[in-house]
Image (cartoon, rainbow, N blue to C red):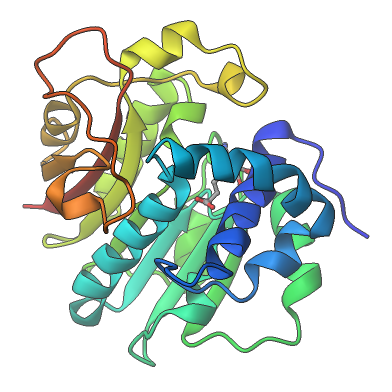
Length: 266
Ligand code: SAM
């Protein structure tokens, strides 16, 4: 049985566990039938108390983020037939969203993560053309994507969910530069970011791996030619009746924040 040793890689199973728990709720924000399989019973049991705690605080972050980017993808994907999910982890959108059948969806992650994932999925049919790409994003990777059929001259959709804060500042800039070079005009991008405050104070099992924070995502993406819209979970466009905690306005200093970013390449 393949194993995921890297702590950031194995965090993808924790996220899958939260999605499995969400899938059992009568008021679920989405259904992810494969999440329980990919997370495993043991991790789900470990995650249940934390998921309850977040729910009680009005901050069901993972469920809110998943639904937000499900909606984003469905709102842009039908005009664009290639989707690239970087740091895909246990993402099962290829199997659970209603894609146009001509859609090509590329899942990119570290080899050990995708080996683990593929070992569970061989009997399941994706709802689009699904490509699994074992890649370390810190190394040169565009040729591998292109070799799988990705076309640089037609618009694409990128998803960077739960990824950017695990990279260094230089790696984030390199990645955005690469994505921009691979993106035809009217390509779209979605992703989440943390601001700088939690990065400076991070010390929990997972947050100790956080390296990059950004207080002005609009400016970051504009510097690469992307027009970004930024919301915080709990805002009108991102609460879904469940994320009842609302962040203070962005000009209030000293607040730990999460940003959901969607952007269009002009
Ligand atoms: N996007 C998924 C989700 O939201 O469920 C997974 C999020 S998980 C917190 C972060 C993922 O990014 C992991 O699967 C990890 O292996 C991947 N990742 C981090 N750094 C990476 C790198 N340099 N190259 C490829 N994947 C990477």
